[in-house]
Length: 150
Image 1 (cartoon, rainbow, N blue to C red):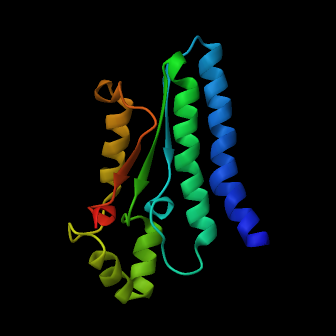
Image 2 (cartoon, rainbow, N blue to C red):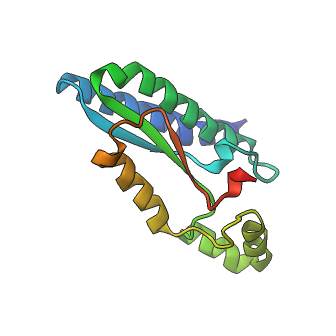
């Protein structure tokens, strides 16, 4: 129970409180703005055993972002989220070093045949924050090399 509560508190509740404060600030300024939340493909598809809390928290971020998008759209506040797959962060690099078979497992799930790079996620955020994303709200942008297309 403690581990479940911890993951939900950090991953979901933390994002909710942040969005609520930022959204209220944007409303007080007269509206307009972008909120881009980070979720995960774990919120879209199940991941390995023992991660139900993680998947629930990330799925919650996706649903919450959609709901906030509907609530704040009349005020020109766009709310989206990005759900990356396996990105070459320090955590993933360490995991792959410790268990080399993990990389092959990851790659077996990614049709593009490579792990994502941090720049792939940054590019998605820049797109959503730019004028090119001015008509996009309530969307969960998958940055997953085709992982969820299978």
